[in-house]
Structure formats: C-alpha cells, structure tokens
Length: 189
Image (cartoon, rainbow, N blue to C red; front, top):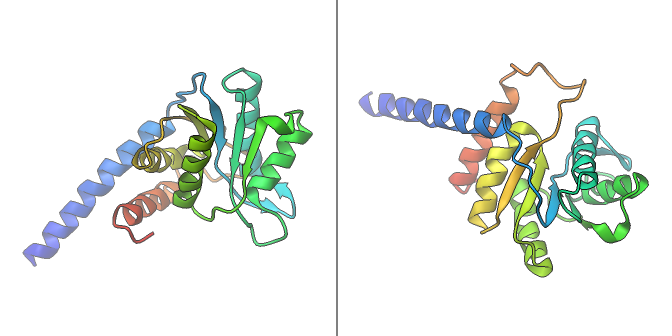
C-alpha cells in the first residue's frame, strides 16, 4: 500500500511539473529572427489544411512576411489519403505567395519524434543554426524538449486559437501532452 501511495504521489508531482511547463510554453511567443520557420503538421482533408493546420500555416506565413526567416519547413506525412501534411502545407504557402524555393516540405514523418528526427537532418543539410517552431500552444513544451535531445536550437511561437477549438480551460489537450511527453520519456511512444 505504501508503494502505491508513493507511486501516486510521484505521478501527481510529475503531472504538476509537466502542467506548469506546458502552460509556460503555451503562454509565450519567443519568435525572433532565425534561419527557418518550422510548421508541425496537423490534419489535412483531401489536400486542404484543417482549420488547426491552416492556423499554423497562417501564423508561419505572418512570421515569414514579418522577416523572421527566409525559409519555411512544413512537416508531416501521409494523412490517410493521397496527400501529405507537409505537401499540403507547401501547396497552401505557395498559393499564399511564398516562392517554392523558400519552402522545404518533409512528407514522411508520422509522429512528433519522427518529425524532429527528420527536421534534424534537414537542419544539418541546410546549415540551420536556429529555428522558430510553430504548433499548438500545448504542443510546444514537448516539441522543444525533443528538439533539445536532437541538438536543435529552437524558439517557439504558438499559433492563434481557431473557432472550432474547445474551450481554453479544457484539460484534454494538456492531458494529451502530459501522457505523450511521459510516453516519450519512458521510450514507449
């Protein structure tokens, strides 16, 4: 019984620590001039970005137009249809006026860890020293931690909320990140 209580106490402390870290990253925009803007993929529907993915792409587009970086990297593989998240992101950005030469689309990754692994190779191949990462606010703590393990220098910039999202006080996305981060740390992701 004492071991169970100790395990429960440890889980509570761990979750509280993660909650604080997730909220810290979610509440700040660190965007500064960098070598590249990196957009983590989200759902696409038959070649069109979902509202959440579009918000990420729009935010990256605003950063690009604001001169934060000369290049945008879109990440994400097969979304279950004939399109990839990275490819849909590239097409969206090109339709928004970004030259194809200013976009790198990674189209094979299927998870956050795999996206960072592939981003690491892209960064080495292109000589990126620092990147600004765009994703959902609650996702940025985990992305930042994974990037650090790959030796990547990143700053984070959360995309704006969209109308189709749940209430900001909904703990679902935070619980998802607590579980995903824990699984990654335990090497069971």
